[in-house]
Length: 235
Image (tube, rainbow, N blue to C red; front, side, top):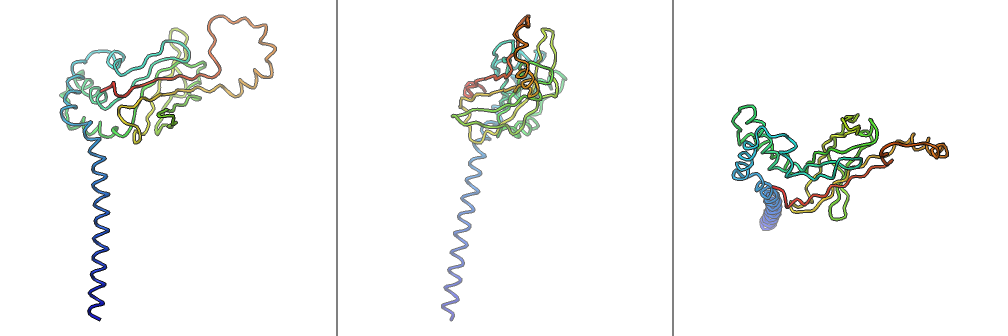
């Protein structure tokens, strides 16, 4: 009987050791993944970003973000997209602090940037065809022939009507970076769908348009804008 109890105790201990080994493996595996992201926010890189941001105090936002931008032009279906890398976000905070005559705190910047290390963030400016075009605007990312939907997307309910009579749409989109390496080439697509009621009306009255005289450039019904980013080129 004692031998039986001893054997059971030994078996239980072995099972506990196996479970602990598995748990430790999972813990260290997760720690290893986190460390790969920590490398992007080390003090040296953050300090470099802070100094860069401070040196750009007073510079316009457009000029400041230009090295992280893809610019396609100024017309329907084109525009500009900015890749908000961790470096750029840290530099932006330092720039804002310098402009307000505040000394940037590296620990605060580190905490703010750390919340964005698992995502790819973009600022977008594009040009639509009608005031409510932002309501019909969506974004997605293509990487390695795989479509990735955003985990966060914000476009205003109405566009801004600028001096050149374009409906300007300013938005922000965010994607999970879990399966995307930092040296990947990604394509950001901004799509503006046509109005359903307008499409149906044109289908019913398509003969009436044959006699219309149109002055200037007419926006296409469906707008699809592609911004290509080679992430390895950006700090």
